[in-house]
Length: 401
Image 1 (tube, rainbow, N blue to C red):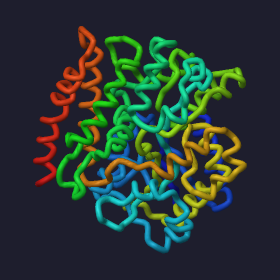
Image 2: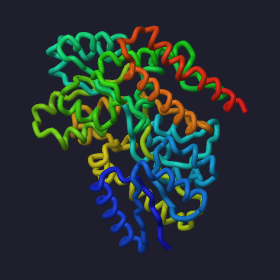
Image 3: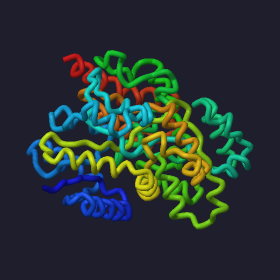
Image 4: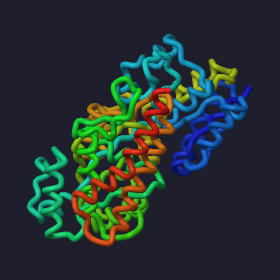
């Protein structure tokens, strides 16, 4: 009996590493494991097909924000309390990652954190030093960050680079820190209404989109690839990104002295915390072998090596040893981001809400890029009102049903 393991294709080298681990697992356990890879933009459709038709997969690595949608299709097998204990119990995982698995008030767990993702601020410390900007003060609040960027702009025309296109959901993940840092939330406490148009949330979003004046002037969205390129070439002093930025710079900047100037800081609000999750489908048969395979996937060295290749972080506290954190001086900041950060709501219909919010945020950025004259605060308020308020009303009707 074989095991079909479906994963996203993040990096060909990570895929090769995983294939070798599975080959050793098969030799040791007398099994046959098929590694099935899909590009990130393609895998969601395949996951849905497996869930609907009950064929083509047993174990999968999925984005943490996809969990609710697959659960709503009744496609995932829950992990028993005993099985969770065999993996060390929920206590071995960071709480923020574990919270991404609990849908509403339901205590049933249908996934295990596998690789962690967070958003932090990155900056070139020598560029900030030239502008007389103190990092410890700059990144503690949205207002301080804006003030620091204004000082930087006296030395660098476009001191900040952010993604503004909807090619990924990074614009939503990044904005979450500003929204929550101002005391806002995406949904009400009972999850029956939207909350992103409440005064505190809008204040946070106003501060976030107000960063447009520090971006390169252009009339088209800024893609993730452009963010990496511009920041790597030091055409901007500050950005917000995930741990994959560390890998990108390691692979694309030859000068160790230059990389030594890269520093990380927490954003002006709780970091977005996400990543990937391991799930087992309801129709999977060889459960004992699958659980044994999952234990193999949680071997520390494999977790370290995968992270080095695909730009994620270890999900279990025990992996964050002093030796591991010494691999990059910015890792302690990323660990703190996991400890103090927060995922997006894990409630029914969140997948739909996230898609619409990301589209609305992208449309707001598009309005900003296409403005014919410098935007006033009133212009920005009008853009946010136009893109968010009517959408919130429609979503409120859906959530109340």
